[in-house]
Image 1 (cartoon, one colour):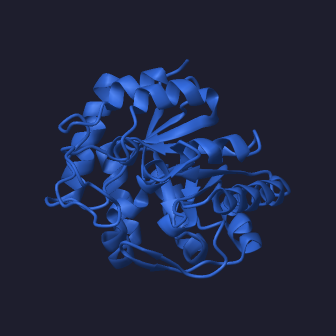
Image 2 (image 1 turned 135 degrees about the vertical axis):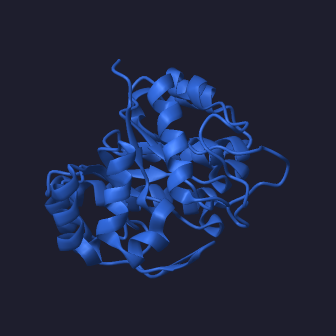
Amino acid sequence: MPAPEISVQLYSVHEALDADLDGTLGKLADIGLTKVEAFDFVRRVPELKASFEKYGLSSPTGHAILVEDAGVETPDGLLSVPPAEETFKAAAELGVGVVIDPFVPPAKWQTREQVEATASKLNSRAKEAAEHGLKVGYHNHDHEFRSVIDGRPAYDLFVELLDPEVALEVDLYWATAGGVDPAELLGRLGDRVVAVHMKDGPMREGITAAQLPDDQCPAGQGDVPLLPAVSAGSGVEYAVIEYDHYAGDIFDGIAQSYRYLSEQL
């Protein structure tokens, strides 16, 4: 299997992106990146498209809320939810091939019925996306693994209920925080996993997305077994750098991750 292509989730630089979209994408290109993972892209398609073309960037994957129909409260605030049709049209215009739902709140992972409803909604979205030549996927946090239904993680039930065409993006940091071995997980999920978030940091009891830690670090400098996990996956196409928060200069943090992954993958 070819080595995954290195990308970066644009949420990592969301403050810089809002202040200076073109300059921010230029800095990412200067680091050496040619792939990004778009987020909050529906409202700024022309700007993103122009800068992508200017700097030789592409966004094969992108994040957008697909399951929830109203605003979604996340640890960093309220996410707005455009209509799915609008999201898919914007994704197609930007060249995003896989639209990934990044967050279904912890309260929706407590019962089998809730997980069934989430899987059913994402399966429906997959059919809508296919009309635009797109796929959909799901990105985890830790709560999908912490919730136990019928003696196993809610995430496992969820995956079983998804149609085969629904892709998975595994956030290796949050999976580890949720108590699973990410290498075992990727080995078990096989080619369902098309992308991983190469997020790193110290692992300790109590790390949760409900209270985002402030000590995430460049890839290879923390406790997350990033390389064994990627090696265990049989279909990983994109290794996506991401920080929820970074205490230093975010562009330096991304550059350190990029150098490490370029050497190791």
